[in-house]
Image 1 (cartoon, rainbow, N blue to C red):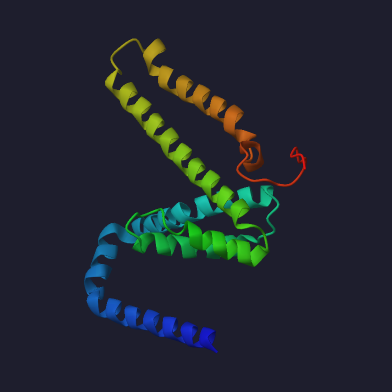
Image 2: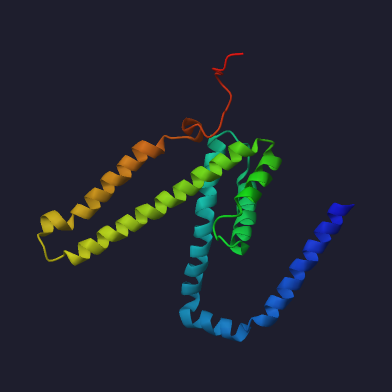
Length: 195
């Protein structure tokens, strides 16, 4: 009996928050801003927000499927959205919703929390690696623009070659790596313990 009451209470809190939010927003100013950047600009902003959420969720989904966790893409998106929403209200933004995602997926799929958490950790490292790669690429582009007047045959193409080598090395090192290889999860198998 307590669960339906809790769901009703949370629903009412959500509706009250939306009512307060709608009273605080000046929709005429919001529409003026949308007209100012145009519908194409608005569509690009919405696309950017969608890709920012969906790309890490898709990567996490692929990691879980590779680890044998039987989850559907919609369930991954739902769990990711729950965790992301919690991340936005925690003091340490982008860290805090992981326990919610861990418990949700573990309960949903009947797998251990350690396996789910291991995929989340690897997913966070993937996000960090992607961010670092783009920062390095941007740094090389800035260097390329600053050194534009130097010998073009050497300096002009050096950043793209170095970046290509870095991506290749990253793939060779991480591309075929799995959570089980890191020893983060004991998937069963050989047990070397005696007794």
